Length: 156
Image (cartoon, rainbow, N blue to C red; front, side, top):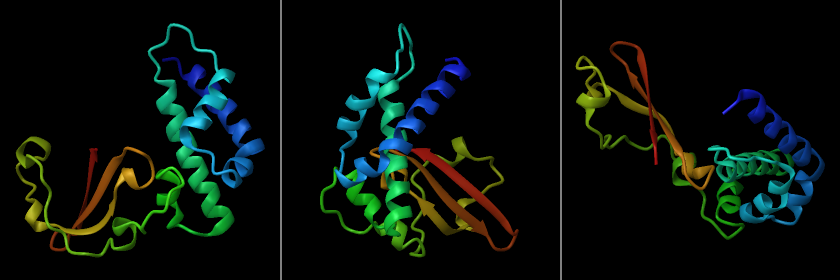
């Protein structure tokens, strides 16, 4: 995928969102409807680029950001992602200080042998699915003794 092509797609989406973003928000435009509306503006022939996914993540991020800028409501992110349905406040976003119960991973595979996860405490967590319909998760851990931070990323 050529960088200039992706940059061009982004510029088209950004211009459309600057012009229509408030209308999308007011009309509670669903992600699929947004994709169908803007997809025709972008011509991709014989490309391996996943345009639908790019449009989805661009829209969900942009509409959530705009909603926050206008309404100053962070909790509404779940509503938008859940197709404008009624959603509960995120337990992750609002309770990031709850105790860390561990990571279900093969630590030897992911981390060098000198890293012991039990030496770390959770200081923050962001689940990508709280902001998109799928997600890249990030867990922030802190080792008090060594004064080191470990950022664990995973895709769900």
